[in-house]
Length: 459
Picture 1 (cartoon, rainbow, N blue to C red):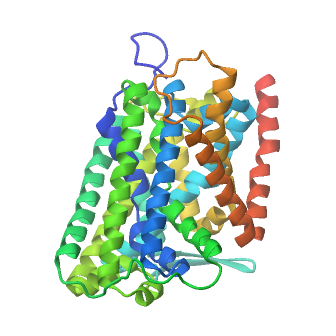
Picture 2: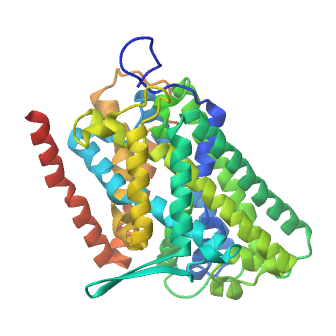
Picture 3: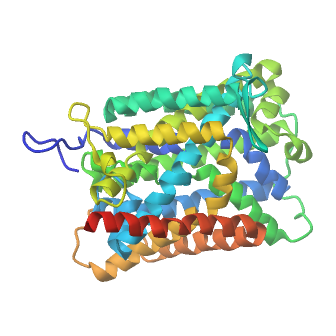
């Protein structure tokens, strides 16, 4: 995974700098969540001060995770990020299990969900791409498969962005950088205008605490907060294509997360200036509702356009880094061997990019992505806990290994990552025991798959 050489098979090119890494981090996190999921936090905790506290706390925990992952990224600056971290700390099976879940559901299912969200908002401007526009219906026994305009728009977006990333990491990074700057700019304009116009509501940050089980409510609110920050670790997967990753990786992760925290807090302040808490709980699209209250129908339409751009940019960033997970798995011969191919001209993991695109598009048209993601949420945070602990495991088992960057406040920050991830898992089992159990069952399907690939490798 090193520099391009004059001889030997083609390899990935280290063409990304700290600026690219920062924008990949921002682009991977900023999607539609701040315009939609922010209302879920208010529904769980109807208190302005506590809502802002949850967003700030989620940001601090994300910083802890980013700095923890940065040490591992500096140790293993290769394409694949978390796959290598788990493999080196616990053995090849655990790296495979992460990569298996990533391809089968986590990453490709996440891309499908983003694509569907993109199509839904695009349909408000172009009715042909509306989710209400049914394009085809096919009876399959007792089940009927239906394709709509929103799914078509999402599928076309995935195909277009897959093609962009196929033709070079720099081309993909430049394109997504432009989109990221556009969506950051749109949020800043909304925030600045929202803070300058007269408020339509006044939120009391120090109002009496809501009644009931406050601790449980805060836990539910943190689920939406964590999902809104998800994607902060994505840039570790392109460490094999970064210049001086030991220096640029932690800088880009920290800078990107800090920018997102500021944007989230300021945007929530605008929401509280626009809508009373009761209205925020009832709206399905809090960004549009807030803009309509402050600026009228034109403002709401502009926010809808911002969501289209923001979701498209998140798709672009995620396609860029997620495809790098399957390349080292294939090179280790525990996944489809053809996915180890690096394009001799474009120096990209071209087969992995195409396979990811095809499966994501299939999930987009299946309509099952939201259910699948609900099932694997437990697995996602179990892997986060294992990765946080990997820093401590490797400090003990490989004390002399080169570490260009060492996580601040060791071992406190890795412990915070592990504890917060396990707390999330425990809360998921309490709130959604059936879905969490099914998720572990889907993860367990990786065991026979791993044994099959190991047997093929031995043969």
